[in-house]
Image 1 (spheres, rainbow, N blue to C red):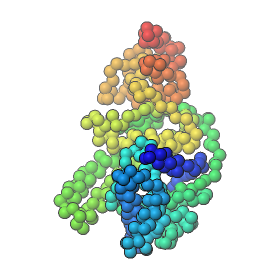
Image 2: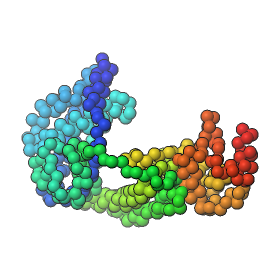
Image 3: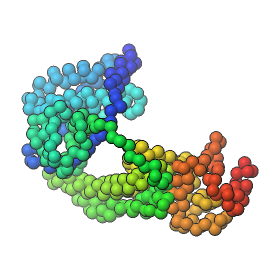
Image 4: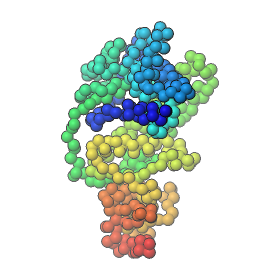
Length: 413
């Protein structure tokens, strides 16, 4: 019985998806005190509707009844009449919270992509989705239902039909995410640009095969002392008091500043890279495994290498630039970019790569980036069917040193 409802739920949730060119622009808002309080109330109303519907859904499962989204919404519409304060709220916010957020969470649980949905907590990921049909955007301001015009820090960069409008809060700032159905744009001709290999790291955020490097700001390290003092003061406050809430917002603002500095560096670097590349070669990083190293865990988390590569792949996909990922165990740093010789040992302190076969002396990160570029070009097979690293690129085998290494490493296999 439950499995049949599961199948109906999946069809109802994912039916109607399209391949429209949707683009989203997230803009910071400048609300006044009245608008600030209204946003907070709508976040609370969306959370209230979500938790109430989730409670009904759990109760239905206990009674061997799989409630649909429409049924959950009907129950909430009946229950909300017992609370007088709900009459002044935006009812679309509650409907969107149930039909969109809770529906997607249950669908992910049904398809085993996520665990069972949890109740939302106050002050964590506060957001709500409003009715996009009554939203208007003019320059640096937006008109929202029931609250009117709100100032924005910048104008909407996309033109087209507004499909979705979501208001969210991060630390002390309110943001609006506007999803627009844009028209198809002409593809940018990047065929004359070179193929670029990218090696990411801690000291240098990204090193390209052409020798260009992008610095890593390491914002957590810069604000670590200030954050430690703010968190120490928070621990001495009585939880729930006004001083505790005030200090909590101070801690949140420091975290927000750290995140902004990191994201700004990521966006500037990724934009500069995709604008000069026709194809990109990157390495495959298992960040969850890398942070298990206690000596490097904080520095790796501060760098946000996973987020950097994710932004790079998203922007490259938008511009139609192919991104090639080397295999997880491809030794891009230990392999010589000229002859293909692979060093057995290479410590992190060795910042210059010295090849004992062809006497190449090159920056360690640049050498790794060139190897990743060769993977993107197609000169290198990073592993064969047995998972063995093979085939240095063709130009390397044409040199005398490369031929010797080729015979030594590959032919015996």
